[in-house]
Image 1 (spheres, protein in one colour):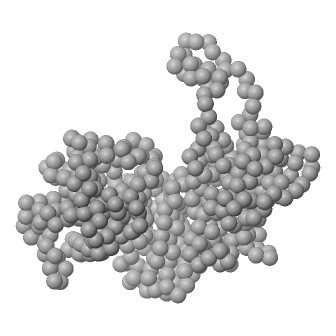
Image 2: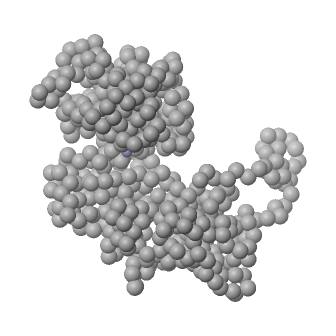
Image 3: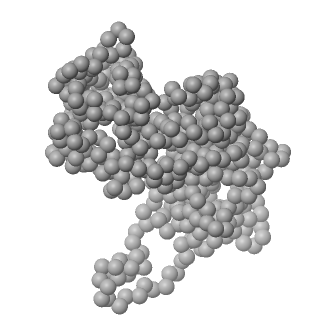
Length: 472
Ligand SMILES: [Zn+2]
């Protein structure tokens, strides 16, 4: 749900006038209604089951009354306490709504962290881990205002456990939050163990939840550091000063990272599953962690355009691993070609527009996006004599703000190209069968599928091809 946009109040007009013309002796009239605040007090309890006991204190007349669990299903009722000492229970609607009466002073509810009863795949957001090592997405446990204005402030305190949330608490241990933090609240780790990965420009604060059989914490964090450093083959410095990562051990899995996801809290937070039985060598071949970390190389794009963000991360997953030396250039092309082929098998002769609009094939979405990324990169290098490319687009986009739009991405491409390139390339992909542009592009780059992988030959753009994956 988009944040509400209240109309400009008298106070805001006065402030605006004051800002526009400092000569006017305007003093805003005193506010008749406090904007209102929320104070969250979260206690981690272990009996009878591991749960979060949440209290929300409404402070000020303007404090929100209309609340929402972004992902409903975890809490069925809340207790509300009136200013007159009254107390009663309110049901949470199937859509996750709770509307409290105007005189409500506080709310209380319990969120049980054991997600097994909520379906096999639901745990990624609703509660993973066991014993004293848990992860849950804020969208599942945090009752937030249904709409938030820019003035809303909230304080949040966690007791009874070592918590790792996307934000940094103040000196008193209080998280000072804005409305959007409550809406896009990210992944939250409770308990487990910690390590810190230091990078040029940023740190990863890592929660290790559970115990993989063959990797101790130092080995896990060293592996994560190597993956995070691959972001620096794309961006000049790490894109965020501090990002939290939860490594959640999943039993009976030999693949190193069966699944991962970034949530766009501010700053972003990442959750990665770690296969309990994965061998150390398997982590060297992992691509999931670097894929999720590479999402940090582009700003969040709102509204979300899955083919663009996934296309960028998918494309760069192969480039970054070659640039770091983790895989050879030939291997990078083998992986790219294999991905494009899987997508082609998945979507047949459907147009890219149909594939990305319907969004019914994740292979189609990821790899048509990756092909557009490759195409843009090559065209940018053609136009600039191989001096600039897609990396520069991401750098430029990051300089223009913490989030981007589809149009802003296109404008950044055009700015680096020096001409309207973005829509020109898109118009060659969207209305035609997905991946129709692949063969001519590979031919120009001198990338030839061969029985044992690929052959990289001399061609019109083979210099560009080598630059894409050159070590850095
Ligand atoms: Zn992704």
